[in-house]
Length: 386
Image 1 (cartoon, rainbow, N blue to C red):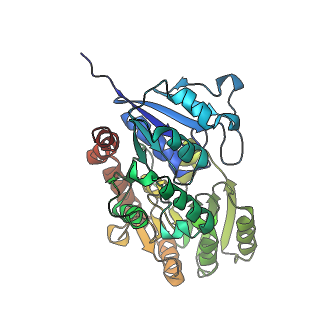
Image 2 (image 1 turned 120 degrees about the horizontal axis):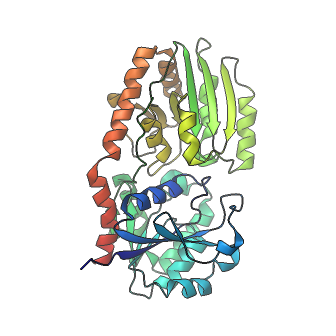
Image 3 (image 1 turned 180 degrees about the vertical axis):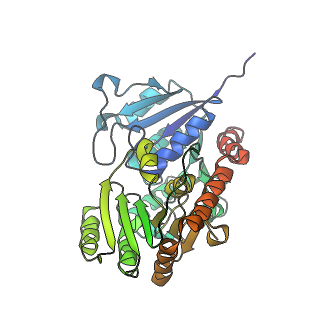
């Protein structure tokens, strides 16, 4: 007799075909793709991306539909309510529910109010939102949200999903050492190892920023670093990502206009995840001086596409230079960012190929590690069995 698959509900503000919200969407998409044969996944999400409605037929909204080996419900704003959640969730008798944001009203707080008194185990992925850099952005709103969680005793009902040891410490610092935390690094998409050799000329390089344009991702500092690169180096800088904060983007554009002639900049806008690989074929190095990442899918995807990285030290990825896959640098060490840019720019094709190949090997080893798959499965097995 075949064992009945466990039902897991995933609550997330945005999901495919949405893509502008970046990492969380990809984290969930990869998780479902890897283990959907062993679990019945149901995804509750909005009918929107960050700044626009998705092109979904109205007849498909607010009801469960089959899609790619799982079920999904796209909810318009009128149906993101406790009363409607009671109607659609009560019928299914989920074994686990997986929340994908610490500060989501409609897809964490409200569904939590429904599930907290049921015999349903709950897992929450804070997605890096408890890091010092992340909490410093809109701090008053976040402090109020955290206070509300504690009043509702939210943290005592759930298993926390940390993607690294550092995130586990952030969780325990905020909610106490008694918090139940499981570590499971995010799963990455599968590698495409075809035609990844990149041509690199001495003193010339293609550098890219791939993320949402917001204070947290720190594009402004990236532009500042580029402004002080020696004039002998010619850098083509591509900015890829949706504009999340308009005022911040204006500051970036003002600094961009001051860049010297040896730095050329192109803003490519938001690009669907499925198309990113086509843009990275011609790129050499990721520049992302982020204020905080709990994982950083764009970092792993850069390595997967043969691109070393220049990132801040506010991510789980450390000691990159020793592995010939990039540099992790404290944000305020401007000179070290500039030296790293010049280091890569000065490389000839042979030397860059060595770093590019090392990046691919590192990504392949990480992506194909079977332990990661088991750790992610354990998120639900452990929650269900406790």
